[in-house]
Length: 131
Image (tube, rainbow, N blue to C red; front, side, top):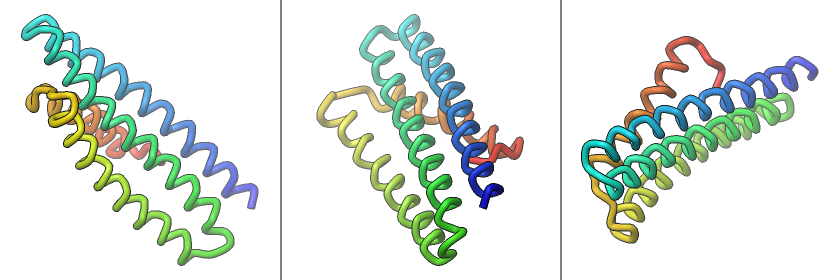
C-alpha cells in the first residue's frame, strides 16, 4: 500500500514538472508569434499551449487516481484510464472549437502552441517520466 502511495506522489511530481516545461515552451512559442505576427496570434499560440497543459494535468490526475484505485479494484482502475482518455480527447476538440469559434483565434498559432506542449509531453514519456 505504501508503494502505491509513493508511486502516486511520483506521478503527481512528474506531472507538475512536465506542466511547468509545457508552460515555458508555450510562452516561448507565443513570444515568437508575438514578434513575428502580433498580439492576436500570440494569444492563439498561448491558448493552444494551455490546451496541452490541461490535457497533461488531467492525465496526471487520472493516472494517480487509477494507481490509488488499483490496490482495491484493477477493473475500476482500467475504467478510470479509459474514461480519462475519452474525456481528454473530447476536451481537446471542444477547446479547439471554443478557441476558433468563440474567441476567433488563428488556427496555425493555436496548433503550434498545442504541438509544442505535446512535444514536451512526448519527450518526457520517451525519457520514462511516470505520467
